Image (cartoon, rainbow, N blue to C red; front, side):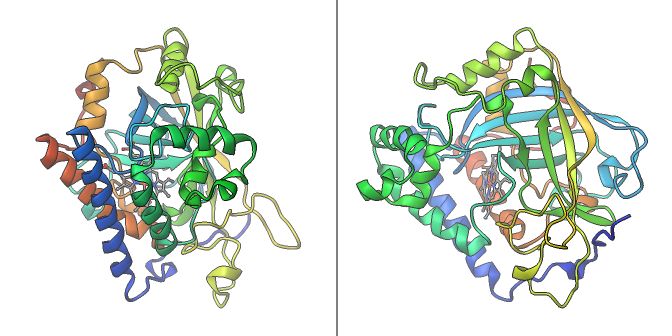
Amino acid sequence: MPEYLAYTPSIEKPEADEHVIFDEISRTMQHITRTMASRYRHAYRPVHAKSHGVLVGTLEVLPGLSPELAQGLFAASGSYPVILRFSTNPGDMLADNVSSPRGLAIKVLNVKGEQLPSNAGATTQDFVCINANVFGAPNAAGFLKTLKTLDKTLETPEGVKHAVSVAAQTVNTVLKAVHLPSPTLESLGAPATHILGESFSTVAPLRYGAYVAKVGFAPASENLKVLTGKHVDLGADYNALEEMIQRFFRDQTGVWEVKVQLALAEDSSLEEKEKSFPIEKADTEWPEADKGGKPGSPWIPVARITVVAQASYSDARQLFVDEQLSFTPWHALAAHRPLGNVMRSRLKAYEEARKYRAQRNDRTIAEPKSIDEVPA
Ligand code: HEM
């Protein structure tokens, strides 16, 4: 058995003044959400504002997991209700033909065990994911630069964003040619693929009981797998992604695999940038296979999520999940504590975003106690 990295609090290396960056991120996110609130007369999430489908399903832990995989939520076989919210990452409500990276937020209900103080009294475990294996920035400071650009481009007309998106899907150097502020608008050139064929991951690590892992979600049933990489025409409809999800779940069942990639133990004298499995550097893809004499760590299935046919975007359901729920990696069991600089920065940012949305829209946003709270 490979030597897995054992979780101890000392594997995190917080910087003394990192809270200054975290505060600035929260402030910038507040500015984005307030700017949008004054445009729409309503507060939305400062990123991933637009949802496309809201599903309820069941997560089943696979039986017979080996000891290193049978940890935390996955320690014993069992099944849990889940809520899935599919989104795209801008903070404004763009037409879906402005193609952008996709998000998947998963809330597992009825979980047992010690919760982090940030989820005290709740019985939920969230996994907040994007369709990538790495984050676009190494740390919160890098992310803040992108966020500042995003904040500045809020006023860029949607028509320009659409043109950029279409162009960037084919020629991603075009941005430089038209001198648009790049890193953020570049992300609008995400491939126009079917959202249900995507694989998602937490990108940044979390505690996995006695170990450390990233968690991922990938299509497992054939009807989802055939959608992977499938080019779709996003031009037809303002809400093309919502339509696609609705069409699929009108009469089909979808199954996703839940998998984990455990970090391997490395020489503790190595600097973060020299490690294959860094905790503090979120833009490093952990190797799946052995390479150059260095061992890799494959993704291994630990559970599956089954979603049966349902109405994936009823008005009542959309309102409930968009307005009365929040998802954050800090809604977590102590056994799945988010780890590293990017994860630490998310504690305050999501909490402040939730508070502002609740106050501005005069809504209570709370952790659900039962799946029956989600409207049909
Ligand atoms: C510096 C890092 C990050 C910060 C500060 C940040 C902040 C935020 C905030 C404030 C929200 C809105 C929350 C709300 O209003 O309820 C949000 C939503 C979201 N973020 Fe992040 N984020 C970061 C990194 C990431 C990463 C690494 C991922 C994925 C792996 C991610 C995926 C998402 C998704 C999917 C949502 C939508 C959640 C939902 O459906 O409610 N974010 N983020």
